[in-house]
Length: 230
Figure 1 (cartoon, helix red, strand yellow):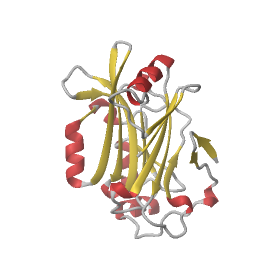
Figure 2 (tube, rainbow, N blue to C red):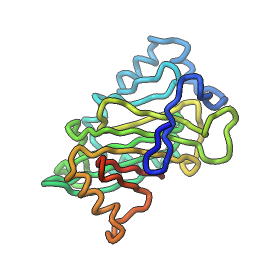
Figure 3 (cartoon, rainbow, N blue to C red):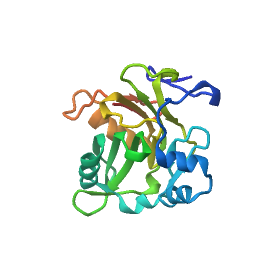
């Protein structure tokens, strides 16, 4: 177990977690039974890698989505076809404008999931660019928080603690289908690359005197780390 800001992040051995016993997603079943199949190649081309033990999907840092950046239109489309909840935090640091964008919900065939990315202003109105130079240390935990799930320790859907800095951290678990966003709790740790960026973000969202103060964020100035729970 590792604890940050009073919230426990679980790090476990492969034997300590049993994923929800539910009807398996057809696409995930196809891939699971046929490693190296056309389905595996399809997800690989889409920029996703699959944990070989748990079957949880994560986006690679060189994924093709990086070229597209992000804007609210994507959220509108996503929200029209899935159950999702976004959270967006614009801030400025140095001579650049950034946003940290988080999501959680039901990702169709990918199952229950959550993600967080850092984007910078693109020069196109309301469109944000992905830049791998902004990658930071990120970790995430996703829990199912509506009732109890049989045989699932702490109701954990996914934990992802990559060693590589992330500009976009993601986890999608196909074993959890048709989940409401409100039934999921996502926790993200973000360690800012510079003291300046950390301070600029804290002053906007962590300072209780700021009009943008958001109590869902917790901050540790010693490590330049912020934790978001929603």
